[in-house]
Each structure stands twice: as structure tokens, then as C-alpha cells.
Amino acid sequence: MTAPELRARALQCLTESDPRAKVAAVYALSTASEQGACLPDPLAELSSSAEIPGRPGRPDLVPPLQVGRRAMNTPEGRAMLIHALAHIEFNAINLALDAIWRFAGMPAAYYTDWLQVAKEEAYHFSLLEEHLQRLGYGYGQFLAHDSLWEMVARTSDDVLARMALVPRTLEARGLDANPPLRAKLAQAGDKEAAAILDIILRDEIGHVEIGNSWYGYLCRLRGLELIPTYAALAAQYKAPTPRGPFNLEARRQAGFTEAELQLLIQPPS
Image (tube, rainbow, N blue to C red; front, side, top):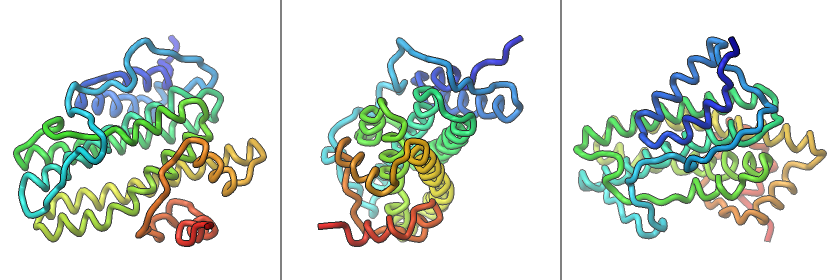
């Protein structure tokens, strides 16, 4: 009997619209992979007629400026922030799953690396959703934006662009944003949320490191230089320009070189 194929199952997880069912499916796929019961076929050519990504009817998606302010001095304001973070983690589950099924021809370790990311993002989403419920709210009750997934869709034609502009750009911004958000939540007395952000930062360093590792692999494979190639891709795909303050230590741990960090601090004019 042939074992189920990992990339096809990742696609099934991606098209699941119910958040809790998606989390459970990702956990099940991760367990099957760890037990050797579900292996990736890098050469499989996959397609889907289902909507990608699968997601619930709510939250309503609006431009970022319409999401609303999150005042930390009110329970609703803190809930809005937790909701925004949960939405980011839900999208992050989807981006990891999309990286698995969409790009053929990569080494097997690429697919299991991104499955590990998907599992950890599912864990983050669950932590935030549970905390949101403790605050008296649920996922989908507030507005949200779709900026992260928009870049995922934009880079669907090239795995090099995906590695450069999603983990190394958008997720790396999360490394910078995490400490000040954690400080605000701790100052507002929400120690549980602050502890969740500690977990997220720890794991996200690893996720960005995975993106850095595969970006470097692809650059070497194609005979490209890391820094000028990144600059060209950022311009081609209209990636947002990173703005400080930067979490330089977290970025170092995630595999950014000192030359890259120097360009962040002092970008060319």
C-alpha cells in the first residue's frame, strides 16, 4: 500500500476553511510525517479547484488602515490586538502549507521544514485564539487585513521570490515588532499574552532562519549573489521597505549576515 503523499495532504489542509479543523489537520499531517507514514514527492505536479487559501467567512478583510486602533487601556483594545495577531498566525499556517504544495523539485527537507513551520504556526494560532476567548471574544469578531497573503499570492510563480519576500521580509518584520508589542501587553497587565509572544518570537526566529537557509540554497543553485538578488526581487515584487527599530539580535539568530543588517540600518540612498 502506498503511503499518502505529503504535499497533496498539505494542499488539503490549505483548502480547509474551518480554523480549528485546519489546525487539527496540520497536527495530524505532522505526526504522520514524523512517523514516516507520509512522505513528500518533490516531483508531483499538483493542482486544486478549491479556493486557496481555505478560510472562514469572517473576519471581514479590509485595507490595513481600516482595521482600527488598538488601545491597550481597554479590554476590547487588547482583544483587537490579540485578534490581529491570531489572524497573522492563521495566515502564517496557510503560507507554510502553500510553500509545501506549490513548489515542486525541492529537496525533501524543504517540505518537512515548512511542515514544521505550519505546525508551530498552528500552535501559535491556537494559543492566541484561546486567549481571545478568555477575553470574551472570538476569532472573526474584528476586522482584519490580508497583506501577508497578498505577498504569498504575488510570489506564487517562483520559490526564490517566495523565500526572499515572505519569511525574510514579512515574517522578519514580526521579529522587530514582537518586543514592543510584548511590552505594551505586559504594561497593560496581560501577562498571559506577553508569555504567548515570547513563544512566538522564539519559534519565529526559527521560521525566518528556514527561509534564509532555503533562500541561500536557491541562490547558490542558480549562481546568484544573495544581497543584489534580494534587492532585485524586492523591487520586482514591490515588497515593503523594512523600517526600524530592528531586532538585530533576533535577526542574527535567524541567519541574516552582518552585511545585510548594515544595509537595514543604513540603506543605500
